[in-house]
Image 1 (cartoon, rainbow, N blue to C red):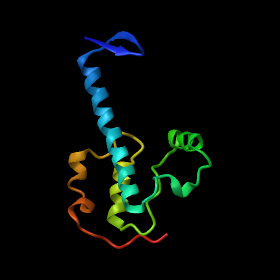
Image 2: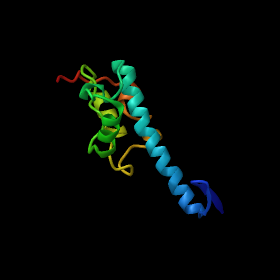
Image 3: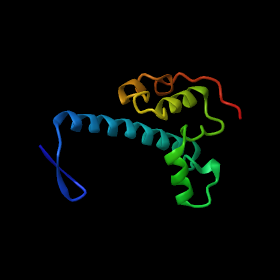
Length: 115
């Protein structure tokens, strides 16, 4: 099977394409966690760190060892949900199916986090 990459055809096995698709799903979970932060806080996920420009933010995100901080005032279940979305190792990141069973999604509220 031939796949376009950088303008040139590249041979690719079905197995490697399936792996690639799996990694994209895990990246989507990370992105979804960012959306949840924006919905809860009304601000971009990394806003509390106060980056001076988008390039500084991208450099930080690319080298970070943890996801963005949980919004102040979020309940404990929201923080735990976001931890599941932001596992740095994609293999440790929850799948969409797993997230649907999380207490945050199921509406089981836990105490509010304090800074």
